[in-house]
Length: 155
Image (cartoon, rainbow, N blue to C red; front, side, top):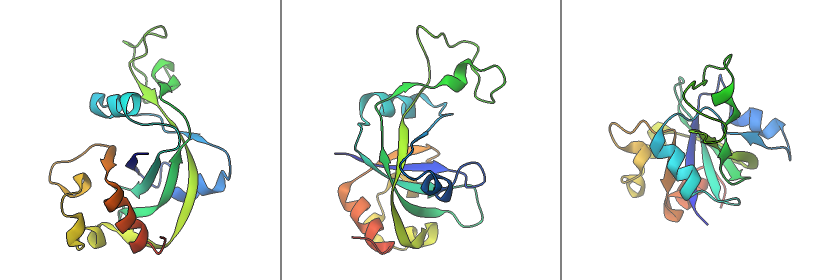
């Protein structure tokens, strides 16, 4: 099993939105970065766990845990001319962009702020905390995952 951190702007799709779906899944669509696409395609597997990170908001941080609920597959927004994620160069027979489905897994007792993440010395090497890292999905180690879950009040 691998562990991930997935960023979303809470005014677009929040952890609360995911929780409200219950057992239903949500496509993690709109990824338009080749490095992230390749991670979804080559490394993410159904059953992996992820930290749901709220970004580009007044209080960024980790809200809870999600589960990767599918293998990578074509992102249909790339073919929809009305979508902000439309890519006229992508072909249905050779899709350029992929997505995975995600599902709610676990709430935290406490929201783990970016400030708290930065203040934890054992997380100093996390990709999300490095300058210049703008990727919407990053790998995290099991140790990092466990530390953040504990910070959120979950073992």
